[in-house]
Image 1 (cartoon, rainbow, N blue to C red):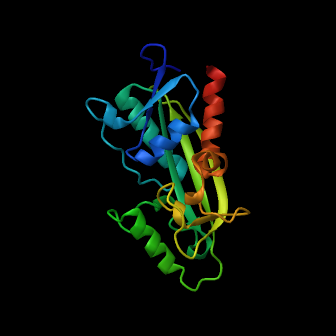
Image 2 (tube, rainbow, N blue to C red):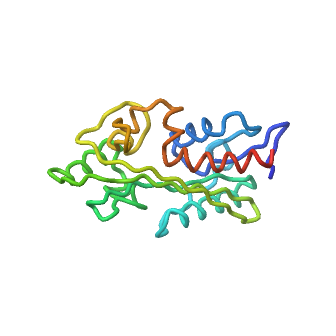
Length: 203
């Protein structure tokens, strides 16, 4: 499984999200690979649509499209926040649920407004990570973490809905964790650990 230049294998992270790139680089740190972004390529491959009904379908489609366009083994994920009181929303549409152009701060504020005076604030984060080869072969790795929605945002780390997600049994939001703590317990960290084990087995 190579896309190598020199002694290191080059993998593409199929995402324009710099937060995801940073987290996957941290999760995969120590492996003999270099993880690059689509913006590092010339020409820059087009961003695939994310219009499937499940995380697995979106992650697989993105990874396959970027791998085919770049000729590199590609990692891509789809993740979302599922709130029980909202019947699983925002779910697979987490980034777009409150509008295509809404900032993370606006999404969090709108989510909290929907839950004003709601007693059951239970929720979970879900992530499906896909590893695709240029020949179309895909493997999937899943992770999830349970918790509840905070009354107000807390913490300056992380991104997306992290400041409003309180981890079950911990009491802190995802945005109040150090990177190492987050990678041990987060949905992306758990999925990424399975991916890391898969890649390490081939090293």
